[in-house]
Length: 143
Image (cartoon, rainbow, N blue to C red; front, side, top):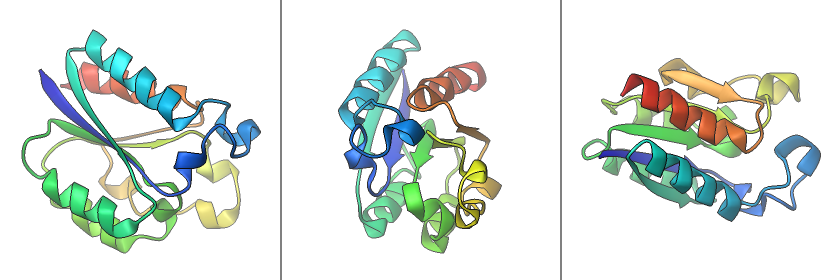
């Protein structure tokens, strides 16, 4: 069984209430459930974590250096601001999938830069909640 860590960043705990035209109507709990169900189909063990705090995300990335076969990360706004998350991701020896429900490059200019993208094996974006299941399908192909 492959072990996949899914990290979710700030304000995404408000999914479902936060601008459904951009993010979709699914809640974070809905997305977690979708990931767990999809993961079972691929024989993945899913660990799903969300935090509004950059330090939590950095610590979880550091802890993932061993024991995980891949990481999916939607760092939310930290995607565009966090060199600390970028630096932590540099130490991972597994595929990193950057996930976004919207397409940041189709939004405000400050969202066009990703500090995660240069380290990502793949970026999956713009599919709303299905971005996560598409990322799991991609991981199934490459693992």
